[in-house]
Image (cartoon, rainbow, N blue to C red; front, top):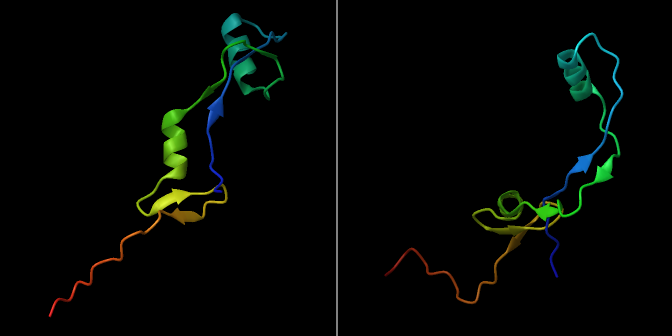
Length: 84
């Protein structure tokens, strides 16, 4: 069984008390603060399909969680390029 990376995302809500000279300055300061725990917004959890595909596929096969390539099953032998 292989391991895969799945990109997930969700949203949180919080209110911050920020001391500033204007609302615009407070918004700038809020964006510079470390993330807070906040409250989970119900229904916001989702799998990011596009990023998940990019994390797990390359030209050779799929990548497991450690980034190692998991080659697809090779049922048929490759044809030799040299024909006599």
